[in-house]
Amino acid sequence: MNILISALLFTAGLVVIVKCSDIFVDAASWMSDVTGFSKAVIGATIVSFATTAPEYFVSLVAVLKGHYDLSIGNAVGSLSANMGIAFAAIAILAPEKIRDKRFGIKGLVMILAASLLLLFCLNDLISVFDGVVLLSIFVFFAVLNVRYSREDEGPDTQRKKAAGKEIFINAAKFIGGAAGIVFGSNLIVDNAVILASFLGVSEAIIGLTIIAIGTSLPEIITSIAAIIKKQNAISIGNIVGANVINISLVLSTGAFVSGGHLTVSPSTVRLDLPVTIVLMILAVLPVAIGKKLYRLQGLALAAVYVSYLIYITVF
Image (cartoon, rainbow, N blue to C red; front, side, top):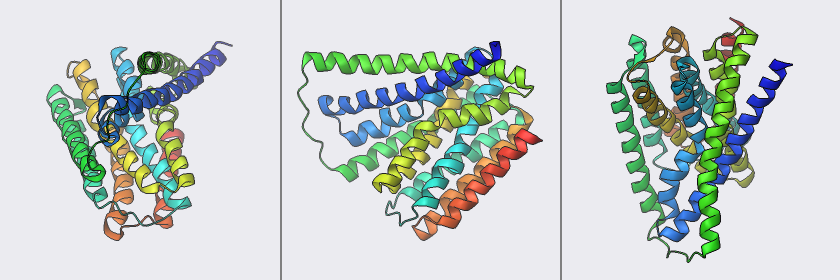
């Protein structure tokens, strides 16, 4: 009975963080109307962070509670889930030309960030210095996004007048959404540890699979919505952005909070990160060269990801 309760609480935590992330994004979008900032700038900063908020807070809570394998497993697992599920689904179901001339640059930043992370992990530790370098990548990427977004959007729209009731509602959504994500993250971490113990698997495996896929649901759901609305280019850009944030912000925060003692399991260096980088190259290179998504590309991404999941869970 106790394990059933833990499974239910774990699932409830996933539902809470996904829903609260959505609420947080809505409030952030409203902010762009009343502050005078463009939606593009808000999207490149607050909304981009909001879509990765589940991964961020789950990993942060895990570090605070001393579950480093769970934290890194969630962050790295989310990278591969975004590529192997979300990106693959778009390429398989709706391959089309990608007119975003900057996709290659953003994709290159993502691959370089992941490669740098792998280099940092070779000594089985992410130090404070490593965290500073990773955080610098986040700042660079955010500035790059703001610059590109302003160029694409042109002059900002006039700010919208906000009534007192509307301000209160959206402030409550913003704060409540963030609080809900933290609450859900605690449910996930606490019950993931119990489930890992019951199933006889490592916390890293739980982080790489169930938690990673669960916290990647905003990106996965966005990808499905993009296919329906024929906005694939926007969605794959968001996936790349989410991955850069996962690498640069989520793991740098973990390094700082742990005091530079964020230990990395050998399997992360030998298998998880190399597979993730392969997935990223499969996702970025064909698009950068051919300016198009390919169904075969999506099938290759899905095949590599499924094979990887089978290997880490069976062997």
